[in-house]
Image 1 (cartoon, rainbow, N blue to C red):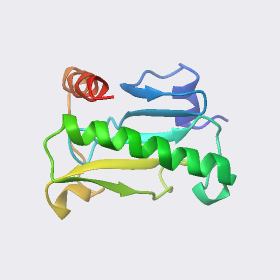
Image 2 (cartoon, rainbow, N blue to C red; image 1 turned 135 degrees about the vertical axis):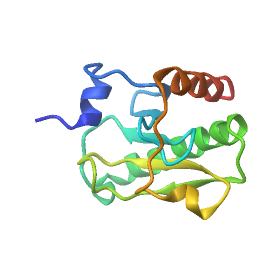
Image 3 (cartoon, one colour; image 1 turned 180 degrees about the vertical axis):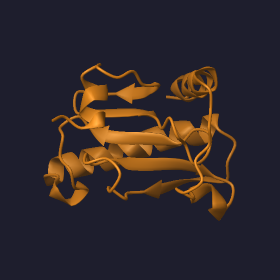
Length: 129
């Protein structure tokens, strides 16, 4: 059965897309730790990030860096935090989280944001790419 993220890649589930290439996709987390919390994934479904072949792993990190720069310009923050946890969805992914304090990286305290709020943030980030 395809992962939630593969279903997003395939267009079966909508997302607030930030950026896309042939190999990677960045979109907003719908249950963010902080406004602008973005997920970056390889389109190929591989569960564990360290199982990615080197080319794909390096590409994911480079793509994440580009997306992080846009998030940082679009969302007021001190910096972008990066996390790779990999337990909640069996599809390798990088969390890019705008941080103003350590508390913003709390995965047990998710924000509830409307689809309109998410769409507005996604548009601001896309403008910075």
